[in-house]
Each structure stands twice: as structure tokens, then as C-alpha cells.
Length: 273
Image (cartoon, rainbow, N blue to C red):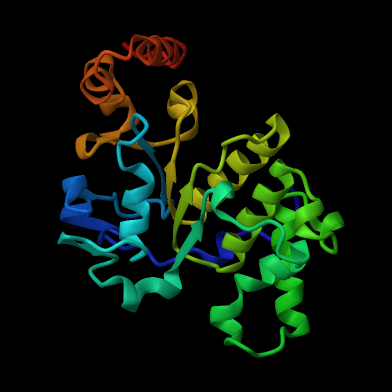
């Protein structure tokens, strides 16, 4: 991938957590989906780099709901979520979001460049024309994900992996300090997966925090620094080396032996327990 470096946009070092969740509960029709969730994301590292954080758990564990609750897309029944000590409304200009592909209307008649320019609206202002400089910034983001040559292509004409890259470019165009990504690797080809991993690592080096809903246990140790093991509640959270253990996975997944076997293989490859 080419394009300008994100390092120039590195935020100032801060000892404050970019994301603090306290006693958060979400319920649908009085049935809890998330219950009493507590989590503090790590602050920036001493060298100014950020962190890549995976949210891992079985289907129905509330992983996507947790991201949506943080973003105010679903209401909290109780508890609080803060970003750098502020509520979402005060911090939202510093927060980016990549939704699940299946939640997007891909038939909407817009080009790849149009989609990425949407990530600039907070800087441009709604209903204002997109300036040349903002278009150039959007093109640079498409360049980072290897999609500049398809900037004029209708989004509906792109493959699933290409569509995911475009939405990743849109998030980059927001120039956020904290990113939420809901299953960005789901259903993509190997080249797109490598491209996404490359962008994640670039964001980390630039001092960004990235929180990713992730299903592939075999790549957790390779792709991420920290992990949240979630099953309605936080079972365990912290550095991958300390938290991503067979014992904690057993608590998270219960008797799902196939998943645990995959996790054990991943741990063995990573030199874990």
C-alpha cells in the first residue's frame, strides 16, 4: 500500500484511557444482551503507539452490540461509556467506525470515492460541496487500501473484499484517534485480509487505538495486542499473552470443543500454553 504516512497525525501521548466502559448493561425487550460490562482500553504506549484490541466470543455473546452501545447506536439500560474521560457526544469527532458489510445497502448509487468522501463530512460540513483538497485526501485513503484505481466504480459493482477496503478507507478519511471495526475480516479474500492487517498496524504505529470484533481464534495472537473475551459479560481482558489461554477460552465458549481445539492450535503456533 502506498500513500502518505499516518505518523504525522499521531495524537499527543496521554495516560488517559481512550475507552472506559463501566457497568454497562444492554437489554432487548427486557432480556439482557450485555450485562455489567467493565473495560478500560490501554492508554498510548510510552513510544506513542496505540493498541489493536480484539473482541472475541461465541455467537450471541454481544460483541457487535458492545460496539454499537459504545457508539450510542443502541441504548444502555445502565452504566456509562466514556472516551478520554468524555461522553460520546463530546468525543465523536475523534472516533471512526467500520460496520459489518451485511448491514450496508450496497445498491445505493454511489462511487467508491463518494463513500470515502462521506468520512470527511465532519470536516467539510453536511450539505457542503466536497473540495478538491478533501477529494485528494479521500483518494489518498483509497490508495492506502489499494483501491485508488477503482475510485470511480459504483460500490455495487465491487467484490465483497473491495467493498470492505472502501469502508476501511472511509474510516481512515475520518482521521480518528479511536476506531471500532465490526468483523472487518468476514468473508474477504486473502489479499484484502493482508491489506486490512497492514492498515491496522499502520494505525497502531500512528498512535491510534483500534477495537475489532473478530471471529478467527487462530489469528488473534498474530493480529492483536489485547483481547476482550466476551460472553454477555467480560470473562477476561488484557494483553493477548496473558489472557488468551485455554482456561479463559473454556470459560468463554463453554463446551464448544471444536472452537477450543482451534484456539489451542493457535496458541501452540504462537508459542503459548
